[in-house]
Image: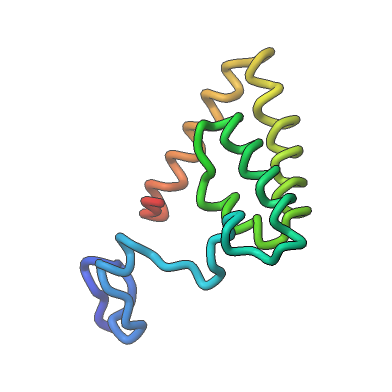
Amino acid sequence: MPVDKNSGLPEKMGVTGEMMANPEPRVPFATPENVPDEDRADVQAVHDWANAMWGTVPRFIQLLSNAPPTAEAWMMLDQKLRIDRLKTDPEYIRHMQLVIVKAALITRCNN
């Protein structure tokens, strides 16, 4: 089976190096401007929270914001497991970041 050298995937999959460099999600990113009116306040609250925590709204939060309770649950979990622990155990965060980077290198994930 021939493999595309740019993507590392079989050629018959039709995935190009350009597609790997700029992937398009199957689920659209949710922003306060492109969600139904009844969800707008919830999405805005999650995005404001993400901005306060990270200074930006990461793409995975934009994806999770299609279901605002899911994004909020993720933010609460992240706050308790990672952010609150940063104050008491900085070495934990260092190890976690190394694991994330290693996984990204192994999977050739650049996003």
